[in-house]
Every structure is written in structure tokens, then in C-alpha cells.
Length: 150
Image 1 (cartoon, rainbow, N blue to C red):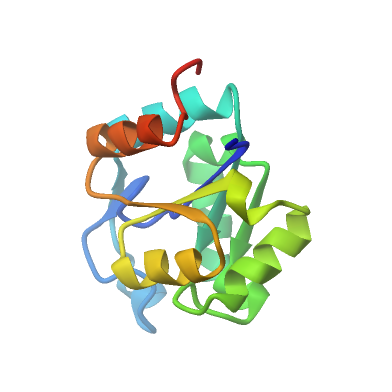
Image 2 (cartoon, rainbow, N blue to C red):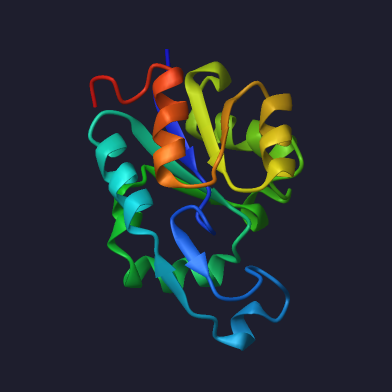
């Protein structure tokens, strides 16, 4: 049974106008916008499930976004690659994440827009959804038994 939903942020909850998290990312002062349907999905899920974020974003950017976007308040916790010392493409980040929050991999769903991160999460035994849009994500969540009573 699924108890926890783990969201990527870039291009899942926020759409970026440049390559996110590049070395020059903060210097570029990128613009980004909320993806309303995705944030709506997060709001729905957070009413029934534990929700977390796992991101490759620099901690400085997360701190900046935290005060800008209200949806961050829906997360029970956030782990960045810098904190874990691994990118999401390395399964060890998921081990770190699960241990930090004392979660069971098989009871979690990880949602990300990058296939290499999805494959990494699968190696760590998490349920996964390759994000393309909020509606497709809802369909995949329903297949996992999520959202039926949310």
C-alpha cells in the first residue's frame, strides 16, 4: 500500500525557461512558473499522503523558491542532491532519503520527468511514475491505488 509520494520539482511542479541546475543557473536568474495542474495534484495528495520533494536543485535555489511558492509548505521534507551527496541518477540518493525519513521503498511513489532518475528509483525498489503531465500522472497514480479515496 502506498503511503508516501515523492515529487521532483523541476518540470514537475515548476516549469523552467532554461536548463535547470546548471553551474550558471543562479547567475542566469532564470524564470519559472508553477504548473497549476501539478500543484493541484500535490494539494490533493497531501491531504491523504505524506508528500516529500527530492531534487537536484542547489540548496540556495530551494531557499529562494521556498519563500516564493506556497506549495513547498505541503512537503513533510525535502532532500537535495547536495545534502545527500548523490544525484538522483544514483540509487544511493534513495537509500539516503528512505533512511532519513524512515520510509519503506515499496510504500513510496517517486514522480520525476527524467528517465534516468526513474530507473535509479526503480533500482532502489520505489514505485515510479515518469512525469509527462498532471493528467497522465493521475492515471498512473490510480493504477497504483492512489487517488481513489484522496
